[in-house]
Image (cartoon, rainbow over all chains, first blue to last red; front, side):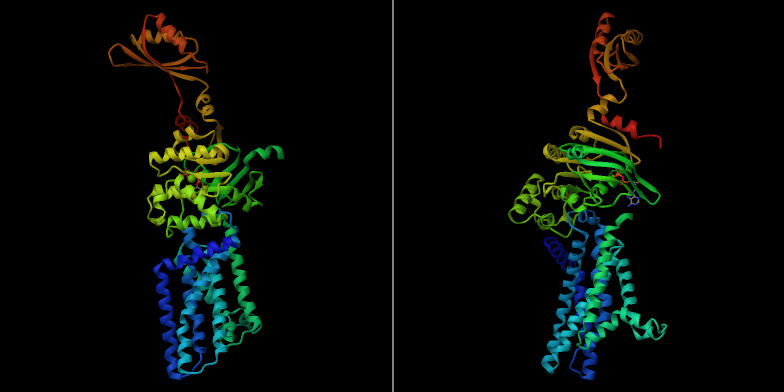
Length: 238
Length: 320
Ligand SMILES: Nc1ncnc2c1ncn2[C@@H]1O[C@H](COP(=O)(O)OP(=O)(O)OP(=O)(O)O)[C@@H](O)[C@H]1O
Ligand SMILES: [Mg+2]
């Protein structure tokens, strides 16, 4: 546990060393606020459904940017050779990195607290769906991050890690979307919409936290964290 | 068997490693005893770093076994890693961290905390002369200081087995001497395996040497064994006053001499002779007597040492 904590601390701090992190935080906040408040003033609806509806798309870019360094940089600078010969298990390193990424994402999302604060000042929104939305955002983020880190463990090029993570997330997201399910054989539709990240976020965005959705996100995260540890153990072609 | 392995720090048996078509290590077997300083030599691409990566559990072998203090890297890899301190070839470090932050991190990872962490860090800082650099960012250190950070992180948890891949590279002469002493001191109780291309360094520090080429063992033994034993003979250099023909004739008559090269040298009338002898026994006395008996005079006579460089070049160089 101490080891996971040590890795967590180092990784979390390293996000704030690079100026890119701050750029991304600012872009994230300005972007989401801007996109949200425009239709908000038009429709004048005092809840955050539209805001949370945007998040899967914003995460699609933001999460790969967080995870691309994860393993790619360790591989490129060869620090992985020391890290993985220290007395730490692959699982400990993977968890340390994952929780650091999740914490960074949580900090960024927490900074968007300006939106609900504005809502409470100007109106009287129902807090349930807002809390549910934030919880859902973190769960979805956890699933995305696990995918991104796993992808990053296969390359030493950060740009490649970014692009492949984007593609992997996009595919997983879109398979539950009506655009795809309309054209797939009807026998596969339930499977696709079950696997799709998107489907599950919609219900959380409405403020309904269904255990099936929670289990879904946690299992996606779990599976990819497991695969990540596997891919470290199998560094045979290194 | 268990009694024997109990005394061995490292046992490598039939090790093979392939990278696609490349055979980096082929059927390599050797052992290292507890308390030995073991030199691992070979030309570029011989498979030294690959072998070290397998021993440190960074990559698994294609086949073969590695036992560290009796524990197999295949199924006890965390326990094995706890026993080992490792400095990889390229000295990979987290360049964003300061030296101090780095050691706090590494120490914690290696299970040190509180007072123990502090005292070990202080000790490493003074041993590797890092105290002045404590607050510097690692990425901005010079090569030699990065090397010291790398060495210090390998030793911080006082491992039983220290594995160093070219630890001397980038160090200044003073620091080389310090690191050499450090390795020797460490090797009094613990075991050190290191590879280096500075052969004089290796012959000065190592109890035993292994030379590999193309992933196979070429020769193993003490530095003394390798340098004296390998041609099965001895060599002498003498400066003699006289003409070439008579010097040659008289030296021929010495028992055991197999080959003589002569060369006229300054001042005039002097000849330098290089004499090869067949046996290992000293024929210096024979040479001296013969020269005196023939009425020649001698200004220098010495028995030449074969250097490790010569052995190395002969065994691994040339050809393919
Ligand atoms: N990851 C890898 N993929 C493919 N081939 C590799 C890999 N690592 C090493 N090799 C090959 O294995 C062989 C042995 O390499 P290794 O790095 O072990 O040599 P070395 O003895 O350490 O040489 P040097 O003195 O140059 O450090 C070389 O032919 C090298 O090209
Ligand atoms: Mg090497």
